[in-house]
Length: 241
Figure 1 (cartoon, rainbow, N blue to C red):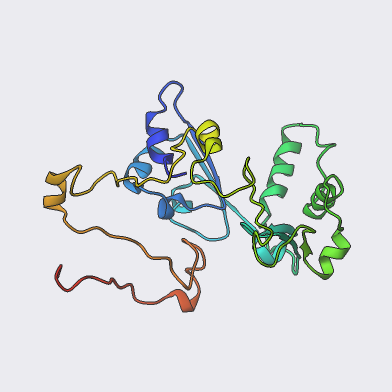
Figure 2 (cartoon, rainbow, N blue to C red):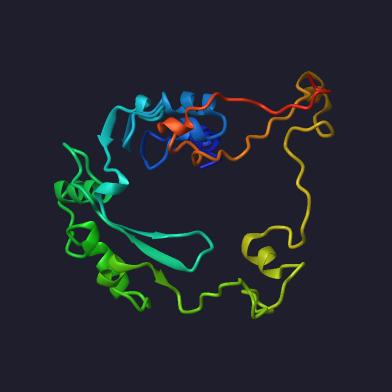
């Protein structure tokens, strides 16, 4: 996603002609949105499925109204955590709003694809995923409480067993080198533009901006809440002022 604009701009033969965007707002959250806007304006078709009329949705040829989190079943897991929980449907989507998976089903039927392998709704898909997995739970149990993995540790790595080839904490990671072709040692990576590598640019733009993580929203999400409508501000060193 971070290289979306430059990647599309470099893709010439064949060129990118269409975009399908869902659960994302690249015109707000991506870097170099000026280049992204120029690239997207050259496309023949842009389809956006979203709950809100975002900056990205305003550029679309077709906007498909998506369902909110209260209007469909889903499996939710936490990054780096040992649990999953069932997001339960509370109300039906209003009007023509549909979850993205329902849009796929309708498109698949319209194109004449065989959908025998695909359940008719999200809950059926979740049941199939759980039944085909090694999880010792069911949809009925998930409706009552989240599922906690049997290997869960209240204090991470309290047994001093790490998920590395050696089972130890590694300062030199051979796996990082072989699998991702990255430096196996901790290292400092200079920003692309800084006072040492680009002094002329630094002389013209001496200040560096860092966007702190917002407490009342996540990336570009939840900005419509009243609590998130605070006045923007910056912290700056008095000497720089």
